[in-house]
Image (cartoon, rainbow over all chains, first blue to last red; front, side):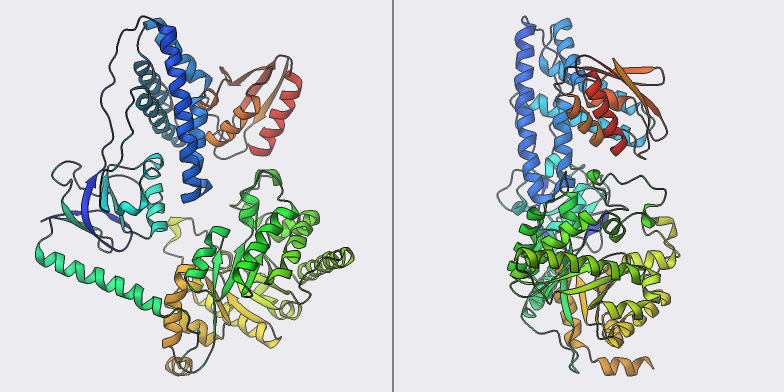
Length: 549
Length: 85
């Protein structure tokens, strides 16, 4: 048995055979050719094929990993069509009377070197793109299929590093785990492993040769270890953990369909956060009681123009109908800060987290806001929709919003268009200001939903992206927990309900605390609903309160 | 002929995404576009040339347009730069 270690990016156990992913790095030969023009024509043909291949990869990636992961293939298409690149290849073929493979390899190396010589790290990283597109061209020219995994059973994929163009071509049903020698926690492979829910490891010291290829192995994503040729004892121990994990999943499955009631009869709603209609399947699969946060900004971010009323209406209607009467809370656009859409033409800001974003855009550009409200209200006739407004700090904002909602309702009324006249309106509580005036705000709305990520950032004055502040950052900071209690109390005093839709809502160590505080709803990513339900079912809130005194 | 100077505001500079979009804008137009940063000038024939300038936040780039559509394209590119970079 040999043990290798690495950094785990996703937990879990995988047991199966290793398959070493080999890049095809056979040397390109320099061959003299007699007809340069015919060779150039051959190059152009290969280029068109490569662009087509990338188009297919783009579509595949778009479905599997979304726009962010797919963009690289579109960029590669553009690089293949680059005038300077084409000129260089043609020039080498013509002036040296050599084969296209050689000209492409030379050009790729030259351009990669040009990027490597640049100061900025971003531009240096583009050298890898040059090699990737040149390799693709050479594979087409020489008629070779690009690398892949050959397996007839699911395997553990071992590689130096995996480019997006490589993982996207793999059959996902044949992969038990990813283990790479290089790569970062934010790499494409890590993200893919999380989406696929399989263990993955990076920075692993495993050799990429026949000493491991095809061998039986165990990947332990909890420990960050790979056991090759495990002995019977290790195999039995890991198999036990593997079975326990499987059993846990199965046990959670049994919680489907159960009501979220504590031992002493307190009820809480467990809803799902989604950012895309594609997540609807997960909402149903994990037995969510509704959607507590529908991030409507994805409609704006995925578009190159202001989404029209009809475009939005179609999406909201689908969601309302799919949930068939369960509540769907749609948050109006939360653009700005780290979420930018070009056509909004927002000014560059020194401090975007405190800038023109979310409701501030809506109240500055009421026509954009009204389009969205009209679409949501029209969809409300097809299910149970509620509307939630982000980034509130003042009472007048809520009053202004309600005035605009009334205007839109009156327009729909005048046009004879159906909508839910009882539609609930709520606000996100994500600024310390909103907490302090929560009583006044609660009188105006039907519900509060706490955005703990922003509330924590603004309260502690800590940017969570900044790793160097980790020592100071504490998501359970007493100031935050006190605020949460203030928020619930204010809501309940005025007949509104209160929930949490930030990441803290899924923190299983706080579930009992949230129940004791009196929260009516927790909205979390779909996969966290059943684990939360388990705790709710096991909790006795009055006993818990006594134990705290 | 038309031209304009532009100071990059985007923190990432002229990276792959805007370079791609810019190239889509000028592709197939009746116009020759040159881009310069300092004493380095490239003929804008694709994403690589403009990226090779390594233009970052605070750098000034000069766009020059020659051809039938010079004036119109100049305005379009300028608008694109202002909105995206």
